[in-house]
Image (spheres, rainbow, N blue to C red):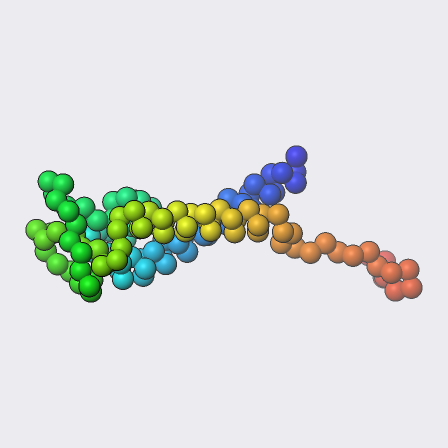
Amino acid sequence: MGRAFITIARFLVVLLAMFILCTVVWEFVGDKLYDCTDQNVLGFWRPGNWVHTPGGQPVSTVQHIVHGRSMSEPDTIKQGWTVARLWYLWYAFLAASVSISILLAWIPWIPRRRPAAEHEYVPDA
């Protein structure tokens, strides 16, 4: 039971670290791919709320993303990208986070001490 608890704890610690890393990376990637006029810092934590327009109008496609526009203007997405592709990218971030967390949860973080060889001197404690 102790080993299972440690493995789950490692998984959760790494997953949290991966989500923090993904949040930071998403900000840089998202800045290149889309602009939401009412966006906040937590774009990765609010999937699907990346680009939208009032009244169900289509999102504008542009060649170069410009930030800091008025909220009365429609959200923009880089030419060649769609909301579906942003979802695929988000799922890739999520899959990478979970995969890395699983991998690092099973790898021992502190190497086990190997027993001292018989011919080595080990002082009494």
